[in-house]
Structure formats: C-alpha cells, structure tokens
Amino acid sequence: MQSMKTIIIAIFLTGITVSGVCQFSPDKENLSIIVMSYNVRYNTPKDSVNAWPYRKEKVASVITGNDVDIAGLQEPWIDQIRDLKKLLPEYAWIGWSRDNGKRKGEFTPVFYKKNKFKVLDKGVFWLSDTPDKPGSKGWDVRYPRTVVWVKFKEKSTGKELYFFNTHLDGEKARYESVKMIRSRIDDMAGELPVIITGDYNARPDSDAYRMMISTGIYNINISDAFDIAEDKNDEQLTDYWFDGSNTDVKRIDYIFVSTRIRVLYHEIINQRMGKYYPSDHLPVKAVLELK
Image 1 (cartoon, helix red, strand yellow):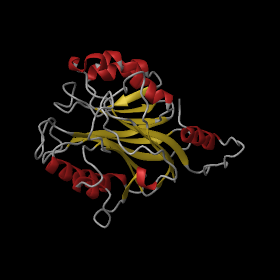
Image 2: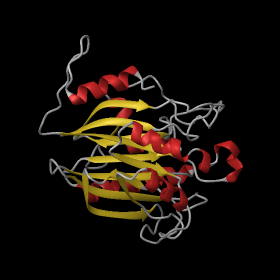
Image 3: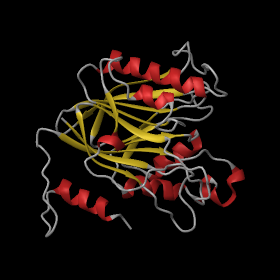
C-alpha cells in the first residue's frame, strides 16, 4: 500500500481537490516528472530465494507502481536488462557495460518512458584517468565504474534536461569520481536542468558526498533532493539487505539535482513484497519540477 504522503503528492500533481488537503497546481510552464534511483542487485544464484528469477517482476512493479518517468538503475547484467525490457514495455533503455562497453559485466542503465521523452544525445564515460577507454579502472576500485548520461527532450513541453546515472566504489575513487562527474556536468549541461542518480556507496558525512554538493568550486550547483524536498517520508536509510537484517544500514543511494529543479517530494520506499524486499537496496524516488 502506498504511503499517505505518496497519495497526497499524486493528488497534488493531478490537481484534485480533497477535503483537508491543500490543492497544489504546478506552474504550467514547468515540467513535473518522477525519477528513481534503484540498485536492483546483480543476478547471482547465491542469493537463493532472492535470486533474480524470483524477484524480477517485483523490481519491475516498483517502477511501474510508482509511475516513474526516468529511472537510473545500478548493477543489472544484460540478462536482467532484457527481462526488465519485457516487463516494462512502455520504457526504453540506454546503457553500456562497465567491462568492455558492450555486453560484459554490470550496467548502469537509464530506463525512460519512450512516449514521453525523446533522446537528443547520450553517452558513457569511465571513472578513471582514461574516461573514454572502455573497461578502464581508476584509483582504488576492483572493477571499472561508469557514468551513463542522456540529454532528454520532453515531448509535450519541449523542455530539455540532462540525466546522469552512476555506481561508485573505492574510498579514493569515490572522491575522484565525484570531481570528474561535477566537471563533466559543468562542461555539458550549460543552462539546462541536471538530475543525477546513483549508488554512491558513501554516507552523507563522507568526503565524496560533501564534494558532490560543494559550492564555489563548480559553475553548476548541485543539491541532494532529500535535503531540499518540500515534503518527504521519514525513511533515511537505503541499504537494508533482502531481509532487512543489515545492522549497519545507511543512506548511500541518492538523487541529486541542479538549482533549476524544485523537489516537490522525496521518498525512500521501504516496502517489502512478502517476507523480502525486491532488492538489497531500497529505491529512492523524487517528484521534481523543472523550472
């Protein structure tokens, strides 16, 4: 069952007046969209009852059930992406594998509603000293790490935006990766709104996180959607494991936005399906308004 806040936000966005709820009408010149960051966990038999074949429908239902317009996913392999493509026929996806830029290894794909958005440009870079070299590794990571970016145009309004999605690792690498991401955003985005999703494997008190939301260093300022949301649920943790047994839970999955974006609502979706969660991470959702 959806939380009351989720229901209220849906009411706000549709402009329905309900007794006891203040009516909210987004500016018609602005664009409201729902985005998600979701580490869906790679496919491995060692997960037993939580292996991908037993939960792929649940993951897909999280996306459709929240009416997500654009989702940045982390960790799926190509077989998982193919499954999601079948389960999400209204969505298209963009992505490159981290190992060779083709089909080997994990992806950080971007799924989007194909009837709502047109792709104007897209690309990938590796978080290393050779970012255009497929499979290159930077700093203290065990595996290659990538950033997938897409320049979208919303069809009904003509509004354009940039969307970045990533999955970070390595203490030094996270910090250096964030600096690279921020620099690329400065180089690419210009005056357009920017949304960044990802599993940063870093808490809000980390150097990488502080660099991500730093001001005075880069031209485009970036904020954590959680911090500037006009409304949000009470959940503050994202790393629970399938059964919720993680005793060191923390917030490591994020949606970041540039200053030209208003965050109407932020939610970390703490919802089991049966005994288990659909993934070992909780999905992060935000309702955004692009000015």
